Length: 367
Ligand SMILES: *Cc1c(COP(=O)(O)O)cnc(C)c1O
Image (cartoon, rainbow, N blue to C red; front, side, top):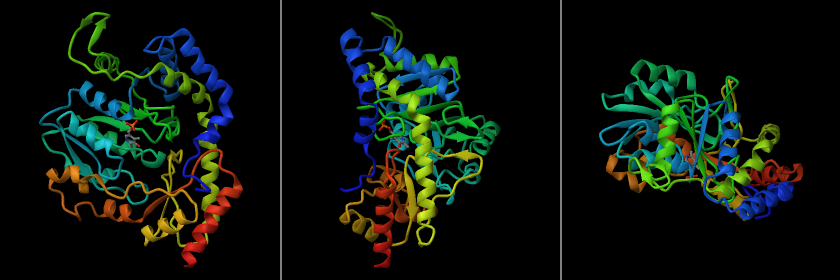
């Protein structure tokens, strides 16, 4: 690949001394599990999101799982979400024993369409889980309003949206609780698996704190059955170095996005649109074109790292056959799954690299 989809090495090189020092510090003081590194990052990330509590956990997936459990969501319950997301969103809902109830997306933002939520609510509905897809917050005022009317919990899947804003408030502070992933390629990523649940709710924070660590209330005393879903201290040390850079990196992504927009203006490719009340962070830079698969293949042959997020919506995944949702159930989701492709996007990308991506697209489309 001459131009990768993301370049984690370029980012590491820009902060190498700080990262190496932080990792060495953890190794030297051997506080690998919980301890001051973890507490320090949790406090910093909670402050960054504008919430009271951040609980580090083992991945974004376990963050979703533990947040649902903390709210007591389980067998017999339904959780409304989008089918146009990474598999883990639905998976976590299913793993707690609840049923994911999908709603189609709003074609402009690719996020759950708030206008379609009310029709999906049943007496079994307990929560709504919007996903801030590609780094653009979902339409949270409308979602929270519907949730309020029906006394539903709202849990943000903010795994792609670290630092994004909705009406000047950060993703993570827009609902009852939010879940983040620090998977390496996320906007704030570590060097392995990690995630966090953030919330203003003291009781939910305490539940997650117990559940992530075997229900432990003291070294040898366990109040309930929990899980081994703690975050690694080494990962929080890396995240602690990266967090102060996040706003600059997100701004660099926005500038790349604006430049893509200009460079692609005279092509038939459809560039991202967003709600004026949001300030997205372009976890992915997603464009649309019919005949997507052929375009992706040509770009890959030209050495351009393109991705597809996501080619198979959750309701059409083999794992969800038991939901018995036929093709055509969510027409907008399905159309987008055939048309979207993600172009290379990272803060360290150069003008020359971006020009090369756009030239390759123009060459392919000229056919
Ligand atoms: C990455 C991601 C997750 C899962 O996070 P992991 O840390 O990989 O477990 C969940 N939801 C969305 C939308 C994601 O992008």
